[in-house]
Image (cartoon, rainbow, N blue to C red; front, side, top):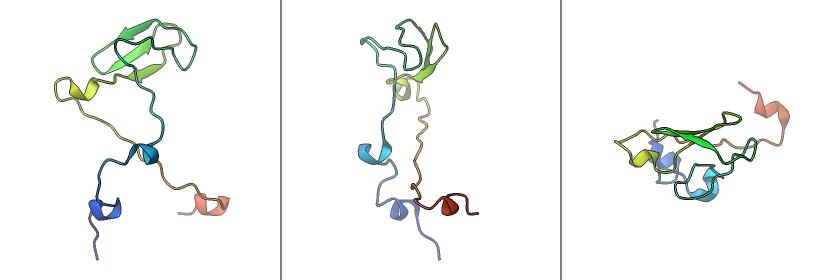
Length: 89
């Protein structure tokens, strides 16, 4: 018995913003403070921005729009209340 990915996720491959959580990205034309050290000096690449002081890397907000760049999405799993269930195989 097999289930499709769309059925398992409620009909949508990309989770909604409230399920996805907070994502820090480098936004062009805004003052971007580093989440690691608070400085605002960045080295900008094609897909990532790197802090010049502590080398924290952030994805560019516009990266998926440049040359068909791949978008990596992470999905958080359920949080278990029982610690034994969290490590069950």
